[in-house]
Structures are given as C-alpha cells and as structure tokens.
Length: 374
Image (cartoon, rainbow, N blue to C red; front, top):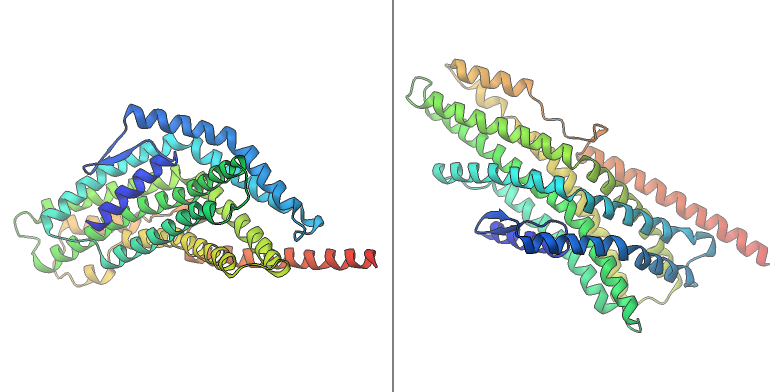
C-alpha cells in the first residue's frame, strides 16, 4: 500500500510540473480534458518563459565578483544545456505517455497474478524503490525550499524566474525517476515469474495436471515483460542520453562553481550544507537510475541452478530454457552503450577528470591574471 501511495503522489506531482497529463485514479491511469489542457499550457509557458529566466540567472553569476571573469561562460553553458534537455523532455511527452499506458496494462496483469499466487514484491526491490523515491523527493523539495531560503532582496520578477528554473530542474529529475519506475516495474514482474518458476519446478512434476498451462502462462508474461522493457529502452533512449549529458555538465560545472564560491565568499554553513547535500544526493540518484538497468538484466534470466536440479525436464520447460538463453536483454542507450554500474563508474571517472582539468585551467588563468596585475 505504501508503494502505491508513493506512486500516486509522484504521478500527481508529474502532472503538476507538466511532465505528463495522466494521473492515477483508483489504480488506473486517466487523462482528462482539464489535465491535458493544463499540461499543454504549462509546457508552453515553460518553453517560452524559461530562456529569459535562465539568462537572468547566468547574468547574476556573471556580476558576482567571486566568479573569475575568464570563467564567465560556465553558467551560460550550464543553463543552455539545461534548457535544451528540458525542451527535449517536454516535446517527447507523447511517446512517454504511450509506453506508460502499455506498461500500466501489463502491471495490472501481473499484479492480478501475484495476488492470486499470494506473492509480494521482493524486499530488495522495495528497499531500492524507497531509497530512489527519497532521493528524488529530497532533490525536488530542495529546489522548492531554495526559493524561500535564498531569495532575500529579490524582486517579484526574480522570484518568478527562480520558480520557473526550479520547476525545470524538477522536470529533469522526475523524468529519470519515471524511467526508473518503469524499469522497476518490469524487474518486479521478472522477479515474480522467477519465483513462480522455481516453485513450479521444485514442487510439481511435469506430469501433474495444469503444469503445462502454468508454464505457458509464465512464458507469455515473461515475453510481454521483455517486449515492454525493450520498448521502454527505445522510447527513453534519446531522453536518457540527453539526461546523462545534462548530469555530467551539472556535476562538473556546479562542482567548480561551488568550490570557488565557498572559498572566496563568507558562506553560511546552511548554504554549504544545502549545496553539498544536493550535489551528493544527485550523484546517488543517478546511480540508481543506472543500477535498475543492471537489475532488470539480472532478473530477466532465472537462476541456472533452478534448472540443473530438475530430474525430468518436459518439452515445454526445455523450450523455455532455450528461449531464455537465446533472448538476452540488451538495454543500450540509443544503441551506443549499456546503462549499468560499470558505465556509471566510467562516467564518474570522466567527470572527475574534467573537473580536475577545469580547476587546472582556473589556477593557470588566475596565476596569469595576477602576474599581469603585478
């Protein structure tokens, strides 16, 4: 019940920020004329009004004396990438909504099967879902609270700009969370199929009545989950490629700006804590987005020892084993690279190298500037 409530709250939040026009009502996704019109109008407002808001924020950085003049371009690069990815996210809403409805029908199907079999979601999957929901909620809440904590002396226009910018950041974070939830549901379905297969193989003989029908039903559900997983990966491909690039730019530039700001300005502890925690939580949040791809691939195949312990293998079970061994789930982003923990570590290594290069450039230009002044 807790998971359903959190999913319901997130879906309403996604409608509020203009990420989707579908809301969850009594366990069913619904789109009303009001939500469709609201989402369209809010998307147009975001696309049209966000550029001047981001430009004003970049100019605000440029006027600060703590940011070196030779690094004036960094906030403009950051906000330009943010805007392009936000626009790409909003314009691809229709494709995401289509796979959302298809996934929902599949979820209803295997939820019914889980209820009939008396099974519950794997504790590891539940724990992962709660942690990911906490990180996403913290990031979105931090951006909202930032409007009230760090806007002293701002004009009404500047506060409105902050609201638009923070809503844009909420869209970026919620999109990756939607991708995570979609694959998490697929992993949950795979885990149920594996549990049922292990129970079927270990407790029942192939000659028992209903054995073949049960195996075929699980096979059909497994094939449906695989098709849906591939479709999710295809539809979200460009989105996740753009989100990864946005995350790299965010991590490198914000890490640089944060380190320069805290070193050159008398920064309150609350500001340091706020910025540092958002930075770390964003890293953890994106890690779990890649981690769920690993889990889906892992759950897609049942354990090998499950089959090896079978003394008598029916034709149907033999066919299913061949099907599983021949159908490997390859979740590559736009066909370029697999999204997994290894890729995440490689990305973090690249971020570290680029951050060091940026700091080296800063030190070199700072030394050159001081030399010219002398």
